[in-house]
Length: 149
Image (cartoon, rainbow, N blue to C red; front, side):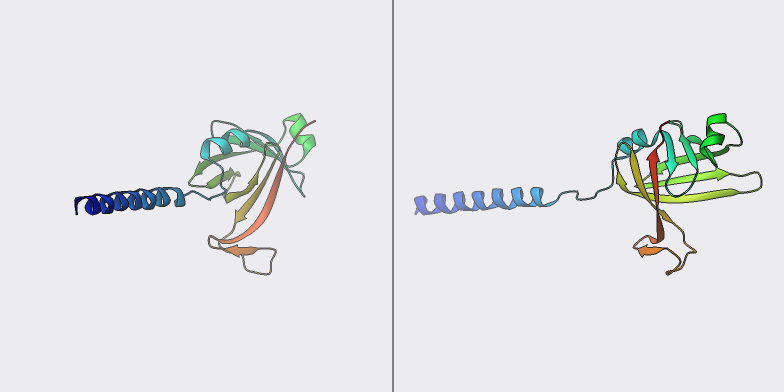
């Protein structure tokens, strides 16, 4: 009788170990979002916006300057200041115009050292105007490539 009880206890112990191991291994983080320190280190630099002439200079201290063309960037002329921050997968940029502040909210869709594809969100956009919708709202894609010259 003691032998059967010991055998049952061993089986229960093994079963509990298997269940615990499966519980810990099945809980993984499958998010494709880059870690905050990874994205913030990659984003610092000079970027050209695909499909537009804008050049973004992004500084590590949460500030930056956007120029309307590569020529204005090269001359360091007529740049518009902005601030940016990263929190919970969202980059929030506030572009400071003389009479208003334009706020851009975006999530990185893909990130590499030389290219970032952003999902730029617009709460007031409607479907059919070049915007798609996901769980966070309406967005369009905004591609930045590392500017080199």
